[in-house]
Image 1: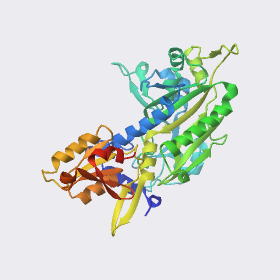
Image 2: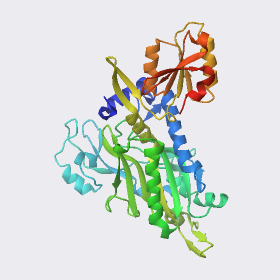
Image 3: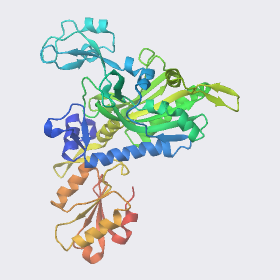
Image 4: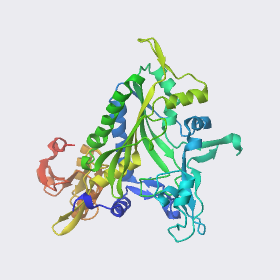
Length: 446
């Protein structure tokens, strides 16, 4: 069957079995909403980071990279509105004290406590117990800087990465001699104390964001916004290669988007649990820079020498969660097929994203094959992401590489000792062809 029937349980099982994703601190019972990327998962995540970075930053002359700190001055989060407004409504099971999103329990898209209270009247928890009244819960993770834990040393793990971009806007503009329009791209960790993390990698407490903040002239706002929408769509559909039939635009209505946003669109992907947000494009107007000007007292306006005018740039934002992208790529790539009466599970990853691109497999453990097999491995490893594997039968190793998503397997057999040739097996078609070792690199196309 195709990947249309894949469910989350299958993906979680594959991710654990093949070293893509492990529950964090699993030997101690795990931590809800926190995961570790294993050997293959960390490489796939790195490949996705590189794809985003090369697409948005490296390939564009007016986009500059940044890696801002996770810990920032608390006033940054005051100015951005996170301390006052980064909240979710919460209810609690009054007997076992499990906590739930009140809006989800009520089936409402609302943070209004009175509306939620009315909708939850007489409603029970999933365990059949009475619920507390809804209350507001701030999702920022609080910590303390310095040796004394008091109100003067409170800090926060950043809930999103864009704040570090805004407070470095002027530094980047000056050092790079940048002229409007220009952008700042960043990939980094963010932390959200989710009330009820769920759906595997989709909603986590420790997440990774890839964000571009693009600073433009106010009069070019609409044109730049539409251009960024197209760029963002092309990234997930063409560069990453997600099935466009599973991608849709969702436009935020006026009552759905932030009060300062002039426009907001999300790219939805059809995950195993339904169509959900994968990426977002937002017209944030001049809210962010003006907020930090007011909070810091620093002038972040831009002087246009050609027009002899000063203005505060508008910000067009493109953001995508790396963990959600990882999950979407796994979902898209997962296929189950019947081969000679047996089920074959295969990840049909784009070759440039695959954690292993070429696997070198001696036909058996026979010591006569090892020297030549290692020679082939040494020949390939500087050109491709390679793996050498000689354990188990060759059929089992093929199946293992299929589940990892390896595009090509190179088999060294006893005939190779005589004819200086090897067999290349292609993942998707399972077709095999014999090639000379001297022509091997040219025969593998990624």
